[in-house]
Picture 1 (cartoon, rainbow, N blue to C red):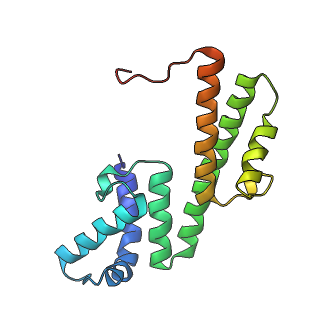
Picture 2 (cartoon, rainbow, N blue to C red):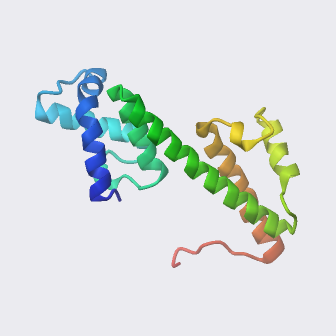
Length: 163
């Protein structure tokens, strides 16, 4: 759930973007109900999960929302900040996942498998050159591979609903 600080950050940028976004949805930014409707549509469009700013998850979901809102506001300095925030987070996630794959396979780096996925998807050889939107798909594939390796090699049962 978004913190008070995150909600304040969003509404600060939203104030500059709302006219543009309301116009996209053919709504009037000066009519409170229409502005709220546009904001809810916008949050849903950016998060693909919720229309309520209070329910936006911290991390990549919030960063994506802020990036898109800053772009709509024409605030490219703010957009650059959020773009780097997303990129730094993906870099950390990928490094941790690759480390875990190597530990499970008992190898320094499981590059052959990873680069096989990249080649299959016609991506560059380095994950650092893959666009952020596509990197999420790669991470999901590698995470699935990690879970399969854990099940196969170590009898991992995964998370149970009661956990």
